[in-house]
Length: 329
Ligand code: PBG
Ligand code: ZN
Image (cartoon, rainbow, N blue to C red):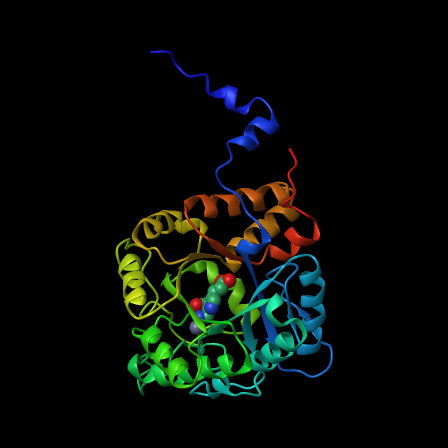
């Protein structure tokens, strides 16, 4: 047997490209937006996420207009409300920042863009948990389903193409599917954050969305990272409840889960390249540890290679503005 000279496949860039079996386009990427409920043009930088801002509706419309021109067509929206309460009633208020932004963006860009609305209570509750609490501060499951479903219907009414429940309450997908159907939204799809781990990588996001829990943590509802089978059961559960797509989150420390999920479901698989993954790269590149484009492309290709069909990432604006997807050596 002749031993293969593997380097023959790597001699020139053109040869290397011939055998690249993983690729990425802007259509595979989803860009997150943080929406303020302020009038006028407001843009507040998120210090822990260089390059990321919270935007008022007027300001986000301009931001999206620039990015749409560059080919960014997929957005996921998070609300940064000025008022919160115990029950998170702002989550389903139709005058809230997210439904208002959806209406405005759909008015302006129509079907050229696809809008995902994150469905959770943590941005809207005074305690910052993803569901409603009992008197002892436990996060109640079944009691959280109605408010979450009302939020999903509010975003669908505003024109969301997808709703994306990130709250990790059991049975959320079925409850939201039923509510959407009952309210005339059979065509609105559900992307479930099925395999969402209780992760330290969400820190910067909680600054961006103002959604850190005021006490305790999310370990009673998000998955323990020491377990590798529950994420797969979560995906199966959500599939049975009618999810149109499922997600693994975070992405880079969980590539094993992405790869396993890919083998076990035929639903589209999303991965969320979360805030902490983004900020590590941004601060690392700023310190001169590595070239930002190179590290971003390696990270995103790795997530794609593991099996993600689509990736939610804060890097999208840099990729689009600087043409990072163009082939170069
Ligand atoms: C809210 C939510 C979180 C993220 C998306 N939706 C944070 C959390 O669960 O605390 C994380 C996103 C990121 O870190 O980029 N349920
Ligand atoms: Zn939440």
